[in-house]
Image 1 (cartoon, rainbow, N blue to C red):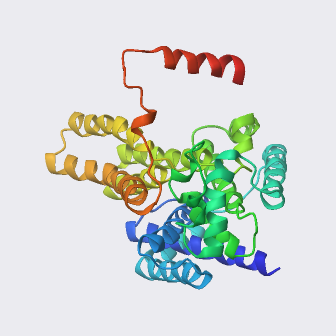
Image 2 (cartoon, rainbow, N blue to C red):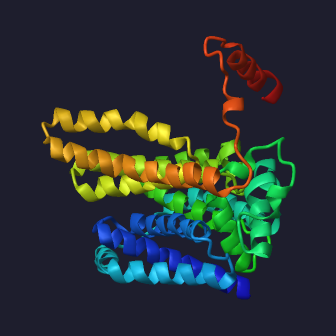
Length: 361
């Protein structure tokens, strides 16, 4: 029971963090969007805290980890208390109603989600990417109070998973201290909030029957459903990338600076989860440039929008890759040895593509 209580308490602190952050931005959005978005934002921001403690060489004790969560959520909620009034006003103006024709879809979605949630709670992490990287680093971090622990004394030349950004490692540490030996229950909150947000986003564009049907189809994708109970980097990265593009499109429609800033922060979280997302952020930047050019906006406005969009991703990349991997970790990541030195030789590309479409699939 104490673990469940701590799970709910951590969830409330993450919700408070997200509401405070959205309050600072003065983001006005319906409660059906605001609550899941706030929890997802809080979850992403809370994953930064153990990592920042590590960068400051503060031992990752339970006291330090939970205190950092408490102080950050309280501080953000006080600074962004406007978020509470926005939520209160939204709840007064909105009403919650489930139509009869929604019930079959919601039952199927809820059933699939409950199976996924149970697997997150009951089964240990099994993917090799996790057990040779984030999970084992987190397990030893709880014992040795540091992410730079005795794992790096083992010969890990057969894998590079120990060099991945510490998003999952930080969350695993947090929830292991909360009493969950497998740690990965944070994925339950992420999947639930994402499904709620996605359902309401679909309902804004189409009938609820079609929205429910599409969401069932989405959950039934074998790979995507597997990611709802396997704590890997792909699903969280997809969640924050989607939210970032969602608010970028909203910025195109509203032109409000708070939307592009929120989109940039969400893209920064996506880059923190998977560092190569920075490339995608740069590829999207010309669309932002064209939006300002075709609407004859000033150069100053273009400059600030570009900075708001790309700067969080650049900072996430520099901290989690350039600084942490190169300056903190005792083992060096030999990127040069993994790069094809003959760029005109496309045989490795064709070999990999052939293997994926024959042996793997």
